[in-house]
Image (tube, rainbow, N blue to C red; front, side, top):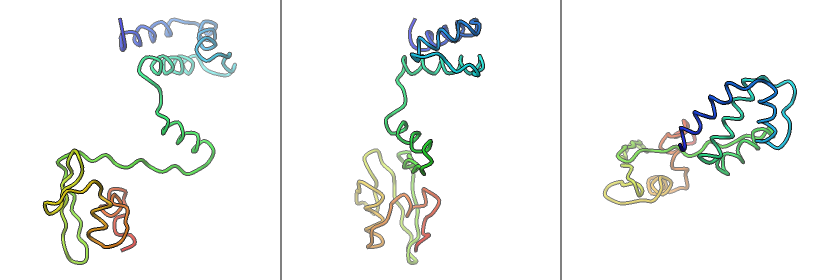
Length: 145
């Protein structure tokens, strides 16, 4: 067995455990006894999450940092949107229409290759812009135009 089969088997095992057995499994997994008020289903879900992290890897450093910031009451920036290769972005600026093709290794506008949307926004406007913002990928395109 490996990977998904191990996780399925672990979930089935957890489903058959009573509260005392879940508390022991929790202590083994997390190094301390669980709080008394936790429900059995919550303990099962936390234990299967821990098993999945062990099997497939846990949260990235970036996600962990964002979660800690959010828990501390700080505002967390959204990650840059992922745009599929082959997508065409269109933007009108000062009466002229610009079209950009997304490629695996960057962006193409008018036959010229660019590494970032921000470089294209600079080319179009002559000023420094967030490329994703300029092309409306975060919901605020042209807000300052």
